[in-house]
Image 1 (cartoon, one colour):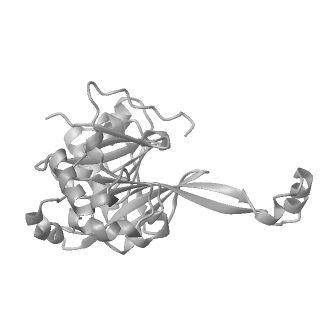
Image 2 (cartoon, rainbow, N blue to C red; image 1 turned 120 degrees about the vertical axis):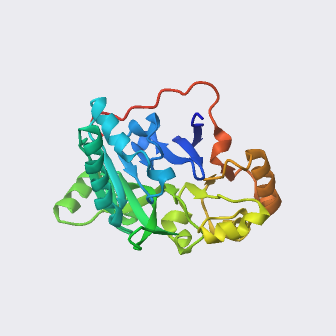
Length: 302
């Protein structure tokens, strides 16, 4: 079955991808030159240089080897994969084992991601990892905590007391070592991956992000226990959660294919009532119609 591709845009920030629970999840922000999760490494993912992996479940991570192999095949730079630290060595081992099958080990840049440690992508863009509520038990019984990520635009803003100074005066202050600007952070998009509701949603950069990509795997009343057992969000969690969030748009991902979008929207309206508005939507509501458009290639100097 062909992967359905959705496209959602808010204030010029475009998100492409697909998210169906247990099948495949990846979200690409072409203009930021990054993807959240890998899915099966569809061509939308292959076009970006940075991929941020939340956890190792197959529907989010199956395409790791293919991503690096295909980028080598089409003469792209190797690309960068950022993953929870305990997964870094298993991913490197996966690529070595795949080389035994394929005959070639593709060049790959694998980086650890730690909660609270910013990852700079450009001078004006950082990615901030944070721990979400989705513990994953490995075969060796080690628990690996899944991560979410926020893409944050960074600006330098002139401090208010210096606003009326001339250019030469500002230059002189800088020459004297005076700090005349302050760092301004603008959270653009937050991706939570698989998770239940947790304290991370109170983080300022999460709750004020312009776009919040939040999973909502289950909507049927009889699936509440399944949501709790698997550390997922159920639609009945949203009425208490939404008043605490200041996001301009909340985009729900990871809905099971067993639930039609129309039925899921009806259940969502039933839970939220008048607070539904146009602030919250299901990502897969925005499925493209017709042939896929060619993904935007990143600038060569990004």
